[in-house]
Length: 109
Image (cartoon, rainbow, N blue to C red; front, side, top):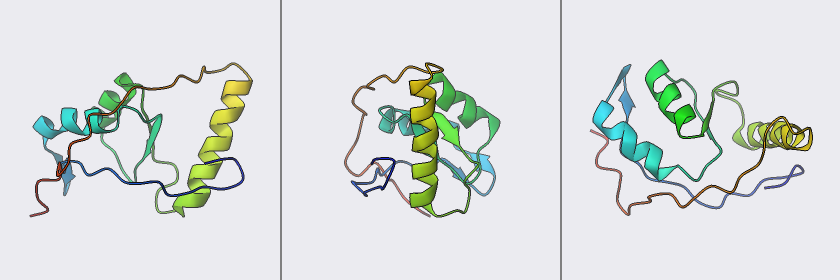
């Protein structure tokens, strides 16, 4: 992705965490491990516990673009991120490999 455009490169399958307002606490660590190489994750809605866990892992839970077009939202976020790096507000760090498990998604039922 660049500030002028974005490109879909893949998706991550993770265990379901929240279904209908309650979280499955035992699945949250595996979700965080599966995305621990990401700088941000876009969410429509997020509770306090998962927000805190993501922030502790260095992942920015972004909910201000809920229900907006993902491409435009990602580019806007990326431009803001680059501005923070350029102004030395934050330091960009290459993040490690995620613990991506094939078939991590257990069920939707």
